Image (cartoon, rainbow, N blue to C red; front, side, top):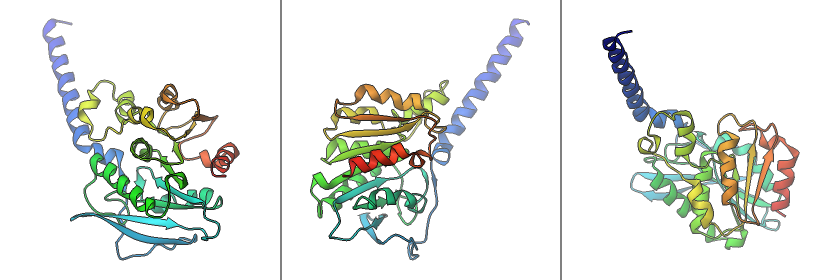
Amino acid sequence: MNRKRIINRVKILLIVYAVIGTVLYFVQDRLLLHPVAVHTDSSYSFRQPHRELFLPFDSSTRLHIVQFTVPDSLRKGVVLYFHGNKTNISRYVPYATAFTRNSYDVWMIDYPGFGKSTGIFSEEILYEAALQFYKLARASYPPQQIIIYGKSLGTGIAAQLAAIRDCRNLILETPYYGLSALIGSYLWMYPVNRMIHLKLPTYQYLPEITAPVTILHGTADEVIPYRNAAKLKALLKQQDRFLTIEGGKHNTLFNYPVVQQALDSLLK
């Protein structure tokens, strides 16, 4: 193969590399986020007792919250639940019973563009929305009655909140070390840290958290590889726990008795 042909092939590869990188940059939110909007005037018909409310944020942003409730005489506290990257609150309703059966209210919040929440989706807004969500809970509960829970995408948001505000426990289900590290493991050939909009560096927040931390992750997670989450072990305190579920996948952890037992123990 002569030198000219080699140079031409290299040029083609560089062009392909640049084109793919450009496309990924502009469609990254569509690849990462899969919201489903719901008309704000509609009502959810969940079987569990619940209330719906809106948390005003700014002129274009209103955050929708669903509060799954337990009787006042039984209530021990509240779980602030930050969900994953798909659809809206309705997808995560089945998880609420793990907490309500232990006499905890469960408050779920939809991110901007998800469900009935409106506004622009950004990392800065996610953090500020989480803080306002927490302040709403503090109007009714002391920190020792507040559990912060994150699933998948929501784990980085939950970790950041627990790093700046007190709570009884932080529970992270299928977390990532950081979105840059996670996406970079797939797109190692690109400068991912400079390209992506959402960083959500969970590894930066864990050392700042004083509350006990429990991490739940399955070895067969097909979305966030176990090896990515396992890097968080080095950042945990002596009182923290990393629960490995053998064979567990991204959305099957609640099917395992060991997970249900762990949650029941934490919520005693």
